Image (tube, rainbow, N blue to C red; front, side, top):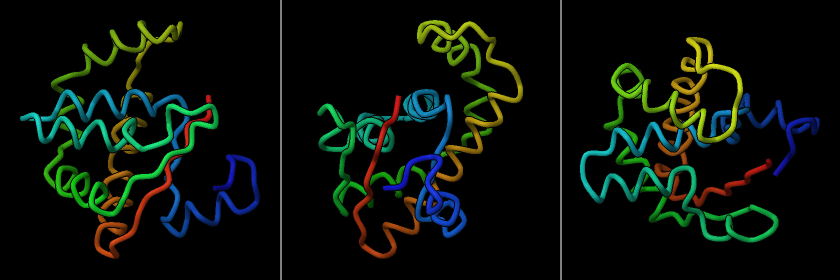
Length: 140
């Protein structure tokens, strides 16, 4: 997987085989979990951002198997990040504080989270359609 400043990174983002977000991964995960309607959706929301096998290791690189990708894609196909942001924005603002950020959760940041969730939806839909696994990498 390319890192943020690798030459290949921008190319992979444009090809829609890499999705990356700055200062929003945990918030996208929180938004998806807040919008989940039942335990199955909650599990898929967790898988989408935080549930890849291997993320608990030191390297923070994990893998979502094709069946997990399909489960997440199905959940995300029903997700409505814009509506969920309107409904759960106060909860997300609280999470921002709990994560230790000093800057406020403003409109620009909220839109960035929504757009990140929408890009994630596209990535999972494409991967699920091809029966692909997804590599997840967290850089803190």
